[in-house]
Image 1 (cartoon, rainbow, N blue to C red):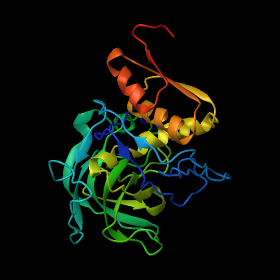
Image 2 (image 1 turned 60 degrees about the vertical axis):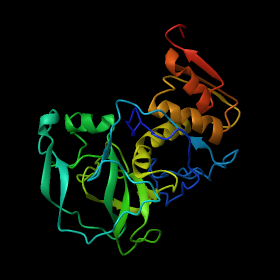
Image 3 (image 1 turned 90 degrees about the vertical axis):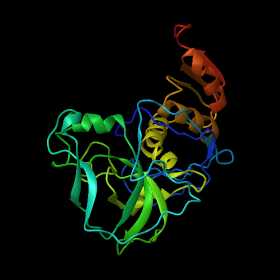
Amino acid sequence: MQSMSLCASLSSTASHLTSLASVSSSTSPLSRKFSLTFREKNRTPIAPPHKLPFFSARPAPTRVVLVKSQATAPASSEAVKVTPVPSETKAWVYGEYGGVDVLKLDSNVAVPDVKEDQVLIKVVAAALNPVDAKRRQGKFKATDSPLPTVPGYDVAGVVVKVGSQVKDFKVGDEVYGDVNEKALEGPKQFGSLAEYTAVEEKLLAPKPKNLDFAQAASLPLAIETAYEGLERTGFSPGKSILVLNGSGGVGSLVIQLAKQVYGASRVAATSSTRNLDLLKSLGADLAIDYTKREL
């Protein structure tokens, strides 16, 4: 799968994503960003069988939420001040592939130019995915963008500038999304681990008002991975599914999408003993303890 995230964290326990919005679709399999009436190439929207669902997942230790310039990300009710855009920004950068030591905080990185179909975001929160580490290690350098690289896929923040062709967002809007249309084939040289980043309008959605920025930033790549897996397998209403590692970030979202959006007849999921109750709370009909039962 092009989306390589394996784990996500949501610090809320019942985040009702009623504000997820459809955005412009393209021929890319990853262009359906964050809509509960998902669109696929040459397909009509999938009508959710129920009211829009509650998505929740436990915080996962392998996924870190990075918040810029503040101890905690503000909730939607807390105003984020829109200030004049500087010419330079702080950003995490690496100029060669390697371990964590190649990653440096640079205070004098040029703020990216905004193309006609892009918005400039003042980053409030960003999140790390396993693909970020693998990309930094050079595991995808054959298809990577040129170095130096500002890493990061997931982002949540406030629009501070819009391109001439942008129609759905204006300065001051709170947005979230995955800055890369494709995870591995030519990902952006300038990602989300900066104070400002430029993102195509079609890759963003309005941030749900009941999610704070850190919660919103934890969703994009993980929920894309969960959704794409269900789509590629042709999952549809009335089918059953077994979700391995259902307590993980992607697995927890697969359970909820399958049950509450796709209309699964039965969802079984595996986890260790301590997470069986979590599986049930997410909608699993059968919670299987893989430490006690051989599959």
